[in-house]
Image (cartoon, rainbow, N blue to C red; front, side, top):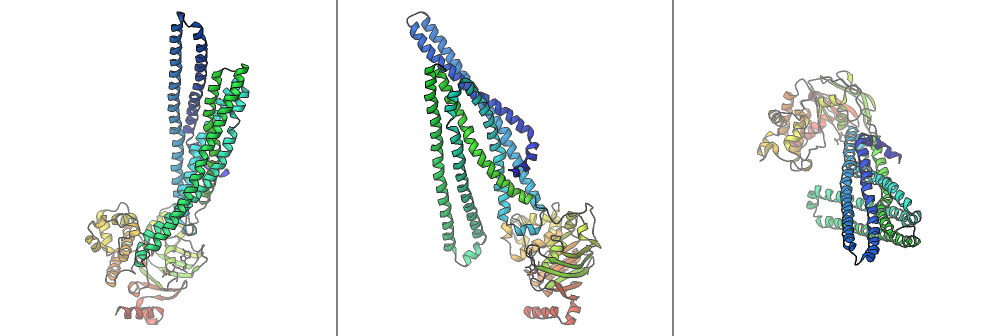
Length: 592
Ligand SMILES: Nc1ncnc2c1ncn2[C@@H]1O[C@H](COP(=O)(O)OP(=O)(O)OP(=O)(O)O)[C@@H](O)[C@H]1O
């Protein structure tokens, strides 16, 4: 339960709405209870009138008496209708205050969680899967909202209606009150248990639904593989299995639900029977009038929902506490990469790695081992190496997506950690190896690096990235929608879009992580030549498997198992006849 205390700050933020809601709730309860007393007066009046009119029959006063009676009954009827209307108005206001409060808190909470998620480092995202992250920000927040809205609203309603209704009932007749309320705790307890069963079954349904969604999502995004390997039938039968399981779980829930209402009606019926029976005895004794029985039946009906809600609210609160615990787990997770400074500094782009090692925290793999190199502003560094040699790791470290386990990365002679994180990242742009495009237009994907970029700037970036001609052939040009993760583009087009995006940001340091692997050598040369112009006086780092991408660089590093095994210019490396030379020979032959 202490987990829910986290939400108090939000409740305090909207305290005014809550207070108003409580006041509206009290008023609406008064309008709900008062008609019962009017019914008692009306019913007693009917019984008295019936007796008196028998005596007056045949006399002149009889018709006057009957007219008076009808007028009074009409007045009572009007009063009941008026009070019901007023009750409705105040119930509307209760929902407008308390339920709206819960929606506002839900909105704030989702924003806070999302903001926090974005601060967390990549290792957090590797440890937790997307489904889990999504579930906490959507389903768990929804469960918490049930506590903030309905649960708080019905709890307040329960307390107010218990105090008012039971207070009046006791003041009229304690014995009848005891018997009328006798079955109600039973109702509360049974609803608590039934509700728990319903919740468990609903959770199983939810799990099945999410496994179905995952399956469907994967089937759609992998549709090319499914079609190519003619696996449509297997895919359908797997879906059918999933759907059958989902159906069975839904049917089980329907069974429990169908027991729920009869049980409720039985216990309410029992209360009514007891009220009539004990009430009858009391009337006979002369302690109450017959109108009181009708009044008490109305009170029992009024108390039914608060009593039912007691069980329901208890299980909502339990579920909300469990959900809030899961939310808090992530909210308490502190980002390990943070800014230590707020200063905004324009960097030159001189970069130095000083005995940098990195052990990935989640896999324990030592990706870099005391790596040292230097590159001056305005120069191009190429990094080549076997797969898994640590090339992308260098890129991740330069963008400060990870911090080195030991050693230092210096930019213009100052430790990378001493810069403001957002400021330094905005001056270092990377085209990552795993290309990611948003399901948006090409224009918006490119302008992601600079949202206020002009049309000319975007077009220039596409020209520099060798993408312009492709775009011109598209019917909608820059307004072409690229589909989910850029599915409608070719591999090379996707890569060049990410290069255009990185260039548009006008970075001081540009890192292209294997971004030229899917383009032909002619386009590769065009892009490399353009980069020399665009990146004049700035630093370029080109990570590649291809010698052709590296040969123009001012300095080439060859990595193997996280260490530099060769470094120098193209000519120097050819000269020493090592790995680079072998690679050059192999790739030249391949091209021939
Ligand atoms: N985020 C990560 N978490 C844990 N281990 C990682 C992570 N990224 C890479 N590794 C591991 O670190 C090592 C270096 O990987 P890296 O991606 O830097 O190699 P690479 O040279 O870029 O390889 P490739 O040429 O195949 O892209 C590999 O053994 C890899 O398994």
